[in-house]
Length: 117
Image (cartoon, rainbow, N blue to C red):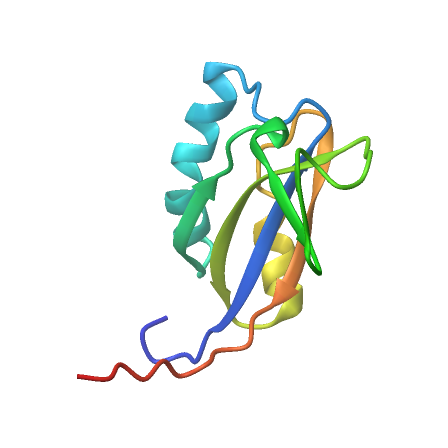
């Protein structure tokens, strides 16, 4: 795997109940990086989001508390996955523990960050 060029993908985790995950599902999420590695991929970052009720939305000059849209599923977390191609990324993303929702996989665009001294 070290010699292969891997592409980065965002895996967006959507759940109907947001962040109310039972401990056994959280444990499955903690094991996910090792399971992905065993299949030739790599998770480089992963974050769970606080509940949807903590969101603050900016639309133009308007700032509102709470989610902007009423949805059945909310974005509960995200991780960055490195995979050989989209098919590989989809196969790896299917290993994401989901209770009552789904995942969305998107290729990432890498922007070079220039730090000024």
